[in-house]
Length: 380
Image 1 (cartoon, rainbow, N blue to C red):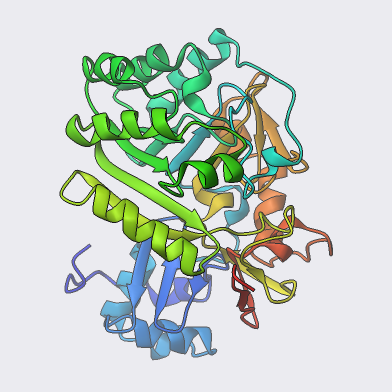
Image 2: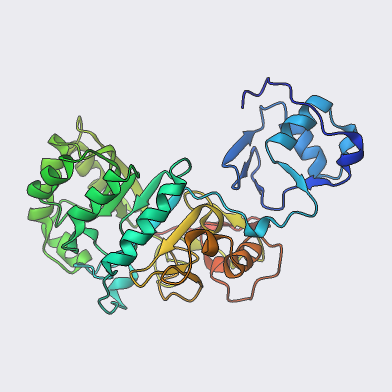
């Protein structure tokens, strides 16, 4: 909405029923509403009034035009509304197999490989059909979680199915199986929305040591082909490391190799997967008062994570599937996303109800909290 648009203020007799949403994610100069995916920054005319309301100012003190706007944009909600059952689906992780062909030191697969499981084709078809109802909000349907998606022999047909359904296909991959032949086959139906290649070094010996597999020659062949035959509208190479000099040197070398190609090369430090791994960035201390999630949006409100068995889990960090919120072999996407288990997880993650001491968000670098908990850098 245009910030200059004047919106009718709610009638005075209805104002006492309005309150700030408990799910707003506050930062020093910004606030985000995960239910609408709207953000508002300190330079906005509504910023000051929102902060005043947060501090306890009565709504009668707020300029009527601003009050109308923040009500229509759902910064203010009815006190009786149960927002814990509401969601705004942006991103889906649709894992079709559990298998990965590498054992990267920064991934739980390296210490706890999973039993091989494949998603039944009928379940995939049923989930895909339901996802079409969310086209207006979906930004990506990722064909993986902790697996390597190109291992699935059905990978190309699955991409075709999603493209034919006009869904935004997204891939995170080590590119070992993304051969030129497969790239060409996918492109016969159109481009993916997004692809990110996980490439940590150009040094073959270190690549094999870091990942438990000597794939670099094939990976570079495939990535070089991708750089000349863009498979997605947005393409990235993610250079993961410990944030040290070696990591920076690897990043510089990869960025130089793919300079001038469609790939954006990005620098990312590894993290501890909410305490699962003893490495990387982690909270300096467990979060006490949880206040939401900032992991490419809100995982509890804006994401759906689906295992090959059709189970839905709270978050990508939940490697052991300790927080199952639904089962798509028995329920619909809407029933899961608006159901009681997901609602409870949202109340815990946003501090509306006190979460257990061992709740996964308490040890996650992406959790928001009061007071703000800093991070221990990856290199420490």
